[in-house]
Length: 501
Image (cartoon, rainbow, N blue to C red):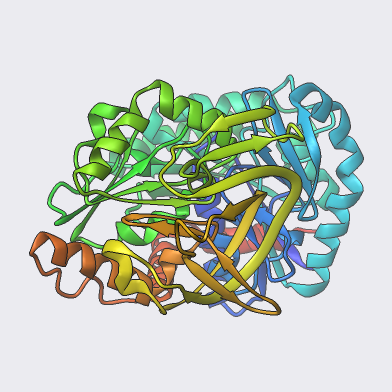
């Protein structure tokens, strides 16, 4: 039987996902075939596997750190919020429908067999399984029929490391309060605590560490510093949305839509010192960037209304007329068209006028397109004409069909797989595509940025010393090196040996 360990947190964004990724890399380095697991993930950043199944992006990152292929067994349940009280429910990579919070709370216990089946599949394939909880195990109103924290730990007999976030303050209260609200059998599962995101002189913290161990009776197995590692994050709690690089020579603005999804599409730009990638939520923040990126969204119609109401749509028009390149991906591509129709009430029903920048019309459908794709970019117009013919690889994940008026615009991509087909649209300096991950291709992003630089009369030089894949590997290794220094890995291995005994 595979050895396992579970990372639970005192709150959301305590650093669970990052610690799981780091442990996956450490176990891989130590020679163990390792898999991540999260029974239920709530996030708008998702990924499509080779089989065309959908899973949370966090477990994809953790699988990369472990050096294994992503599988929906690593994330059998994915919830993608559609509004403040409801989510699209995805089980084993397939959409089963939309549910409001109350209905899902009642229904979720029926998913326990799916969770166990997925976990047992991993047990048969891997030597180590690193499990991630969600939120906090001490949400006393949600503990009944829990399937993601202590309820899951019991189901798979996993020891738990409890993580607290000292950067937000009150870490000792977080840890002690969480332990206090657990039942005796649940407390017994916590074999160690981790204080995460520490800055400063640890000698000042040490007396508190001793006291919290006395109060809880649980050892602290590590004080992990605030890490400067660049690992993709899964949801809108990320600090990336506040980051800027004013010294960047090329200015790229991402519209931060209320239900922004798959913002990992733009992570490649963050590793380049010459690029200022920043997220904007108001017309006053937009300015005159070299490029405006409209990202994916879980609710195209609602987010387009938001864009229109807060003045950003008009600001994008003005920036486009003054020379900004506009590029939309997935929901952002749909927004750039003439009309969006929703006859099946996939989102809000009815029809909405699009931004009118591309000659396409979109009809939302209940059937979700999910596939990995590859091919070559088409005959592009305008500033990005230089991208024509460059090969790409990525994935599609969307609900809707978009039809192009070929008399008015050209396709962006030629998908060359089992069947040849066209995707996306370009007209002048406006571009749209359904393909996520298209900027991860080195040839695409370098040619695009070189063209933007040439237009400004500047030269960027060497954008990066590494490919995107090499850069990710360097960050996973840095993460593992840091955790080895600050976690008692000998104790972690001892804890894992207790499984089944």
